[in-house]
Length: 391
Image (cartoon, rainbow, N blue to C red; front, side):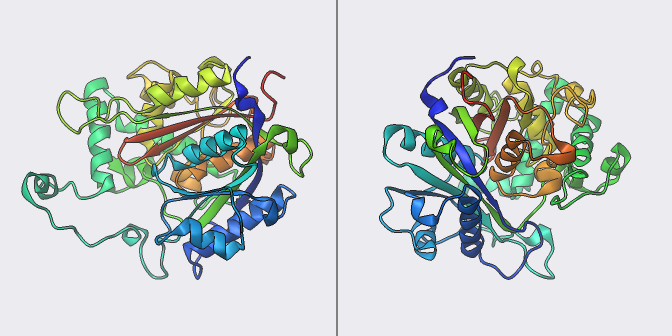
């Protein structure tokens, strides 16, 4: 396998706070804890960091405020980034490009959130006061499209109507993801489920049921990126960054558009794989952004692991679960483990690439990581490996 200069960077540190129903800490405190953990995991000190990338979501000026909390001075790279769930992949690629260019040498990337409150339901975690709707833009709200759930339900329904995708096929993704979560000691949901359990779970926005939708979690995840030469001498096995890509399709939610049928994976996947010098046949496992079961299905299609319209059958075949041909979301993903935006699939990818998966360890020569942001507005792809590129 051949590629480009992306072989010159690696993830060397992973820091994860407690995740789930963890109260009493602000997002900034969670973030600071995660950065400290990631830096220590790499065998580095905070003074070794000269770059800090912060995922949107903490309010205020999170980059400056977090740097101050950590006591970081004279940084060469500091930015807040927001492509929603695709931000983690975008941050890693930005960190890698900065290192390759000489703009920085060691960069921490972090996401933190704390929407859960004691004695308040997860469903209320992201509740916001309804905005004032004016003119034609108020039509969607009047029709009930006032939440992300409703728009993803619309996307899923469009895929089902076009290709014959079924609720049972979506349920197969929920079941296989939970099978992996059972093996993950830090997953929030570790009770096995069946297709009957999926079918019995309540509607959130038809055709999406409760078990089709991701969790809500408090906590933070951070990683540290540095040059591959330096990575060889640090505390943990380096996870080499072989390639990256982004895709922003710009679909309008209207008849005749590709909304719900295709995603930015059509662009970001080939870009990352070309840079890495691999094809889908080389991929050992996938860590896919699973805010909903539907997003796993459509992403698999757009990467080319199966033909367009065959994602449901592919998932129902058992390919994604333990013992399957394409181990996917081996930690339980956002559906069953924890919801940390794009840091959920990325953190599990690092665990797997290091060989730290324990009972859930899968083949790890080439690990594909996806991020999905907005309502199918953004997509990021990373190709990671425990091996230096070309080795």
